Structure formats: C-alpha cells, structure tokens
Length: 279
Length: 298
Image (tube, rainbow over all chains, first blue to last red; front, side, top):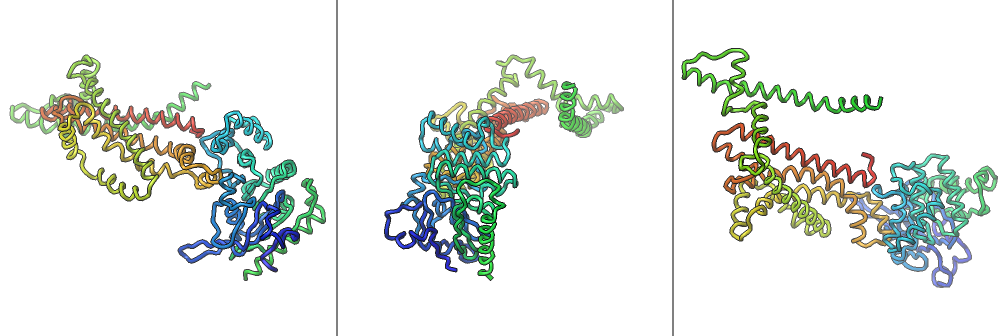
C-alpha cells in the first residue's frame, strides 16, 4: 500500500495547485530527519496528509512511528527537512505566530506556581487581552471542562484527570480553530479516560473545531475520530488512512456495535502490516 | 489532646538539636580542661605550689583570665557583660559592633544579590558572554579574600569612597558568586514542555522571562541567598580587619588577638555565628513564604 494518501479523494487532484478550498492541515511529501551522534534518524518520511476543517483525525501507531513528531511539525515546534506543510492555508510558522492552534501535551504541563484560573489565563495574558476578557474566558472554559470551583487550587491539589482537563481548558481559552492533542489521556486510568473521551467528543460536536489527536489506543481512536491515520515506524510514515464514518453523536455503547468492531479490526490490521513492512 | 500532640511534635523535633548541643558542650568543656591545664601546671611549678586536685583543679583550669580555650560559661559571661550590661553606644558594647558588621553585611549582600542576578541574566541572554564571563567569575573566588580585601579598601579610599561602601564591596565580592551560579541554573530550570507551550503562544522573550524563567528560578534564588548571606557576613568581618580594627566584629577579633584576649575573640566568634544563623533563618522564612505564595506544599 502506498504511503501517500489523500484523506478526501475529492480533493486529491486539486489540493496542490488550487487554493480555492483551504485545508486545516496539508503536507506535501514532508520528511524530517534528526541528525544524531549515531547517524541520521528518519523520524518522518514522505508524509502526504490533508486534514479538512471540522475533522477529528487520530494518529495511531507504535512508539517511534513519528506521530508526536508530525504533530510537533504541524505546531511549528519542529521544522521539516524536506517537503512542505500548510496550516490554515499559511505556513506552519505563520499559523503559530497567529496562534491558530491550541496544543495539549501528554502531561498537563501546568505552571506549578500558578493556580488553575491563572494557568488558564496565562496564554490570554500573553495575547494581551483585558482583565475582564480573561476572567470571562477562564470562567467559560473552566465550566466547559467541569472544573468550576477549582479556580484557586494549585495543580498539585488536583487529580491527574482534572489537571489534564485544566490543560484542555487552557488550550481552548485561546479559541483556536485547531486543537492538537498529543496523547492527552495516556497517563490516566480507563474510567477517567472514557469520561474525558465523551467530553472531548461533545466538545467537538458543539464547537465544530478541527481536532488532531495522537493515541496508542485502537478503541480510543475509533471512538473519537472521523479519520484514523495509521502510522508505522522506521522511517516514520503513513501506512493508511481509515475513514471512521460512525455517526457524530456517539456514546460509549457504540463500542459494542459491529460497525465499530469492523473499523477497529481494520486499524489493527493496518498496524500489523506496518510492523510487517519493517521486517 | 491537641496540645499534647503539639508538645510531642516539638519534642521529637527538638531532641536531636538539644542532644547535639549537650554533646558539643561536653566536648568543649573536656577540651578546655585538657588545653588549659598545662599553663596552670607550669605556673604552679614556677611558684612551687602543689597542684590542686579534683573539682577544685577543674574549676581553676576553667576560670583562667586568658585561657587557651575559654570555657563556654566564660564566653557566655563575656557575651552577657558586653551586650546586656553595656550601653549600645559604648565602644565596648558587642551590640554596637554587631550592628556595624550587620550593616556592612546587609548592604554587601543586597549589592551581591543584585549583581549576581544581573550577571545571570546577561549570561542567559548571550552564550558568548557565558564563555567570556564564567572563567573570571570563578577565578574571582579562587583569590584569597584576605589578600585582596586590603587592596580594595586602599584603592577605593584613593578614589574617595569611604565608610560603609568599601567594606560592603568585600561582602559583595563573595556574595554574588552563589547567586550567579544558582540563578544561571534556575533561569534554565523550567520544564522544556513549558517552553514549548510559550512558543505555541507566540510569547516574546520578555514574556518568557517574566512569566516562566523568573518564577521557575525563585527556589534557586532563595537557596543561593541563604549561602550568600552567610559568606557576606564573613566578607564583612574580613573587611573590618584592614581598616585599622576600629569597629565591628572583625575589629573585636583583631583587638582580641593583639592583646591575647581569647575570651573576647570567642565571644565575637559566637556573636558572628549567631548573627549568621539569624540571617540564614530569616531567609529560610522568606523561602518558605515564597514557596507558599507560589503554591508549593511545604
């Protein structure tokens, strides 16, 4: 199977030259090689990816397949060594400078010396918003992630799940169209994770944001996504893209349905083939 | 019930300190007997007097006028005589001398902290500056302060800087070092993820400095300040030696050694260490206050 896949076939032909339809993310033969003491490491190789506005795209794959690196390239935290990338029709750097996305890391990465409200207000302070505007956005987003009442608590006083919700609220407070989430629930237990998955899905439904989500978990990727990008390691590349056309309104019971299990099976197959390529 | 629990907690906290203190006192007394006895014996031999024995002997040995090692109670007596029983304005008041040394220490410490922070910020700003400055900063600390202190005083005197400032500069010279080292480390100490986050917010260097680097460095700063204040006191005492031993704890030490007044030397030493302990404890309070303000557990 080719590693070069356009997610939406209807745009496959005109995605490069015709700028009429602006994509949330579009990469063209993108590669990234890290020079290390042990020689070059091909973190990403020949990535062609298109993400439409309003998509919920999951990157899934084993460790070392470059899913986090790809996310960091979209966020302009890493620069590609070959190929090109556009975010919202501009360069990744311009998108970053325009604060076009919110980034949620694997760990909550809250500032330990700021309480929860002040943590969420931090990007707003940097953007230079007025105190009133900051207060309003902090309150609204804390309510959205069900953290109201914890404004004055410090991060260490909250559970891991609550900390991660705070970090999501912080990303949302910037009001970006694009949300980049790098294994945000990886460190949480199954029950908390299910709960947060439901919340994030509701959020996606409500706000129609574009979400890019990195995960290790097949059920999580199928449950959340509209598109699943299966990646394989060494060099990190896209193995296949699987459409996940379950209804947008989903609850956890959908995971028992045959449609769900069928998609999960295809993802698992893709992952296995990706490993087989390697050997 | 609560009071009992509190009392118990104080006891568990206090007993290692108290027992250590007792042990030190026992060793000190024993050493004083051993070190002061030869003088007493010589004296008796010269005068043809028989040595006393038992408690009487020990009591004599521990109450000499100019002992090799003064006994603790002699030092305490001297401290009491020169603090409580003397007017603060008196030249013989240890409080008077302590205040002079304290002023020098605090000014030198404040300047040293400021200089240390400024140097650390400069080093952080420019890697080339780090290579240019660090060897000099380290070299500055390898020069014996006792050798360089008189030069600084003399040179500054020649350009008309007199009084508190030249002495404070010696304190500054010592105190800035732990601050630079601590702050360079502290300003780089924040979690790399937090720096990434700042990048995603398109934060300016200035914003990264104020909202991330500086707060992350505070625990490093307060720890460095504890070290700096103690050596600032050492610097102040050393600085008082070449100024003609007029005033300050350093002057008391020097005058004491001129005239063989060991009790005076020891009481000045004890005073200096009490002062240092108080200053460090005060910074400890500042440290835990900032930690609480910054949401840390302790």
